Image: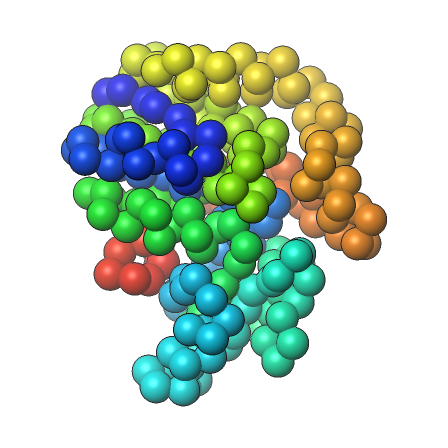
Length: 234
């Protein structure tokens, strides 16, 4: 098993032709919210790229689905949910399908759709995803969603967390070694140090500091969401 890390979805283009399993990470906040909702009984997520696509899909194929997503970290007008994990309580999502569009996470998912398998991961469910990956023993490409196409610290730290967990079963690429080193350096003061990064600082200014605290919890959801045939489920 080899583990490679792409710091942004653009970096993935060089890897997509080789056989592998992809893992998409958007810690703040899409893959954290997806894990939360699925653990709370959500039936499935349908990720799409645009607001218009989400509304059209609801009209034509999923009339009972809920709409979720954000632009510039804020709730999209007319949508039921934003991108906060606190939106996805059991009472709100159990048994429901959710169509989601976000600035970073759903874009990354679309980029890796051709991989043999695609998982979504965040700190909140990384342990369960690592267990599934260890069982399969295939090459892995971890794709960080980043922030509007740019490198983001929190996604890279989660990629390093996964690399650290799988180290004894795998060889690491240079980017995976770097991500693991970052995680090990940050791990003792993870929350405090992430909160000063660009994306986290903006979320704090917008009133979402509690989301950061939530999303940096480790292994609270024992689920490994998989993206297949345009849908994310467990």
